Image (cartoon, rainbow, N blue to C red; front, side, top):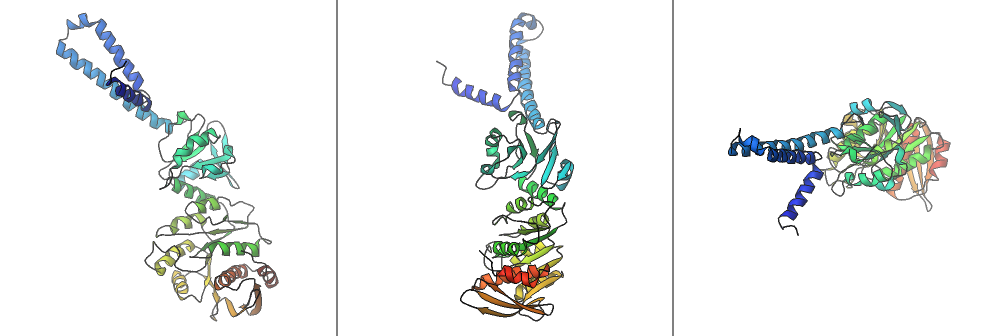
Length: 408
């Protein structure tokens, strides 16, 4: 039976050998040295004293063990960045340019030594893996989960391309490519921003405290028959959802509609760089998602960062705060509201049993639309969607027909 002290020591030794790949070789060299010393002890004692032999033995042991550990660490780092898998990206746009060796619609072509690989899908949720051969997994870390923990599972499922921020021993995953970055989320956003920059179609960026998703869907309903539209799925408006939405842009699309949501200062700038809207739409400003802001003015200013560089901002001109902050940007604005200066003027709102009739005026032309809702929020959201359609020169008759069939 092994002694009680030997058992934990053996576990420690086994763990150390597992962690440091070349420690076993270092130990082997030490054992060879000890064996050789024992065989030549009589000859060595004639030249070196006992105390010197002890010092020499300790020096050899320390050098061998320390050297093998250091070499293991350096070799492991090199394994992660070795030429066999040269696709290393850092969280800068340069990286994407350097390694996006080809580009085709919604595909990112990365190149390894063997052959180009076309990436169609950006994956952040291991449960949604469908096409492992053409998917790139972003190992996001957060308070509830660490994406790196899902790498073994995804590798077994056939996925071979990963964006990581932690050291990965690549030789444990033959054939896999690990793109090493400082911040995985930033890399995801940078790649989506690069993808967005390849297209010149109009992009509508929608933000606000409430109504973003329904306004997006109603704009889509008003314009889908006339344009090839890509839009955010569901409520994909977060730091992760926005880049995944923008990745869906395709050369065939002539209009994109994306929503952006924030909950604290400093978040919109990242989303703005990804969406890069040409048309900005602000729905309203309320108490939703206000926990990170001092007041509505601060929150609105943060949201309006989305529209920096936009060709036009479409907003409710009757809302004093919104008008003040939009005017402060000194960018072209298309206001809707009851004010006489509004580009789309609201002349009357008549609620009925089955819906609401909204009378409007634009460029001297008066018309009315019927929407199947009577609540104030839905009416405001419907008018916002109509304002976008009017700005994009949708015909009045077409607008009237499509507004009547709005659905939630």
